[in-house]
View 1 (cartoon, rainbow, N blue to C red):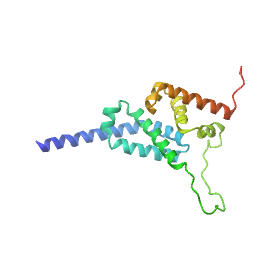
View 2 (cartoon, helix red, strand yellow):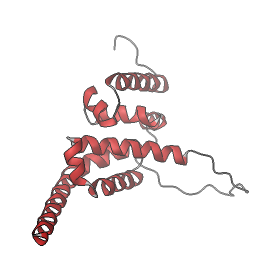
View 3 (cartoon, rainbow, N blue to C red):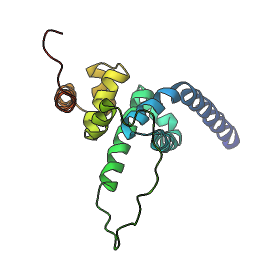
Length: 176
C-alpha cells in the first residue's frame, strides 16, 4: 500500500514537471522581453527569469493550485524580485581609490535611444506598469493582479510614469 502511494506521488511529480516544462517553453520569450524591459539589458533579464523560474518550478503544483494564472504569478514574482534586487544594489559602494580608467562595458543597440533612457530612469514599479500596459498589452485589472496591487495603484503609477516620460522626452505639440 505504501509503495503504491509512493508510485502515484512520483507519477504526479513527473506530470507536474512536464506541465512546468511546457509552461516555460511557451512563456519564455514573453518573460525574457518583460525581464529585459524591467532590468534594462538582456543578461540581467535572463538572470531574473532564471531565478524566478527556479523558485516557481520547485513548487509548481502549489503555484498552479493557488495562483490560478501561472503567467501572471510569474510576472508578479519577476517584478518583486527585480524591486528587491534594485533595493539591495542601489546602495553606494565606497572605494579607497578612484579607478584610473573607466571600465569597458558592452553597449546595446537601443541604449542611446531617448525613450529607452527615460524608461530605464523610471522607478521599478512605474517601469513595470508601463511595460505591462504598453509593451505586453495587459489591461489595468491584469496588471493589478500581476503586481498584486489595486487597479487604482496601477492607474496612479501609470499616470506618474507617463508624466515623467512626457517631461523627459518633451510633450508633442497640441493639434499634431
